[in-house]
Length: 217
Picture 1 (cartoon, rainbow, N blue to C red):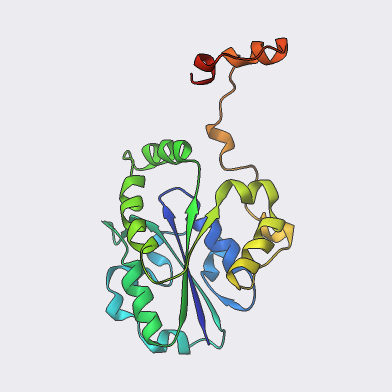
Picture 2 (picture 1 turned 30 degrees about the vertical axis):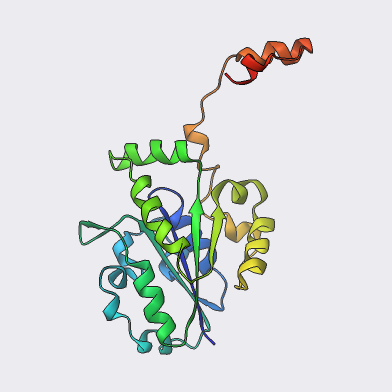
């Protein structure tokens, strides 16, 4: 049976990155153009038109490849031909299932504060609430839904990817050099600022036990 893994996340959570990582294995039919390009517009992703019009997805899309594993990716919301859409992920999943495809969904998680700053920087709007509202629909569907952790990847790299592959029953590439292609630093690094001091620092260094009021600050 052919299998489809749909990866989605709020804008700026690492949709392009995880799509590249999970498209690397030779047994996966994914977003192959991303393997040699750092960034490509979202409306050039292989499933892009289906997120807007699910009826365009036909059995022939899956039959044209001799591979058994397919990777689809979309941010929520996403832009198609310059227009913002909430992708119809559930409808695409239901349609693929009608064709005998086994479908599972993975939602990318990134630190919510960094995600908000990134969205305001790029889109001038905080769009995570739009994604969360839609993801509540997915989480209450009959499809298996998992979470991909942005921070866990950058901390554990190939070990995390190996674990994800086992969890999902999906072939993954675990070569560190290939996984880190285009990556020069943790994507969160540019948003982190040094804190000179915090009230708790002196208490810890002095070996003092903070009061309940101090712990609740």
